[in-house]
Amino acid sequence: MLMALDPDRIDAEFYDALRRHYSDEEIVELGAFIGFNIGYHTFFGTLDFYPMFSPDGRLVSQEESARIYGAKPVSLEKTNEAADKRR
Image: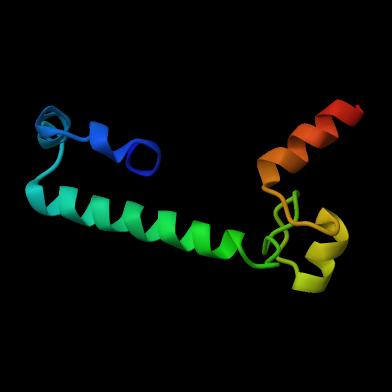
């Protein structure tokens, strides 16, 4: 989350802590993966793209997903929170 929310806090001390567990090559790979996913999720958040899975984990079409999640797609976490409030 730090990379997405406050990248200026990533400093030498942060990398030193990572090096206790990962090689430099693994840190680069991890950073690239995180960066790709931040961009991917940001981009898809601008589209009317519905989740591929229903709350019970079934793979569903965009049409079925639209019926499940409503007019505006939301994260599964928000959907679960709304369901909990209705109980």
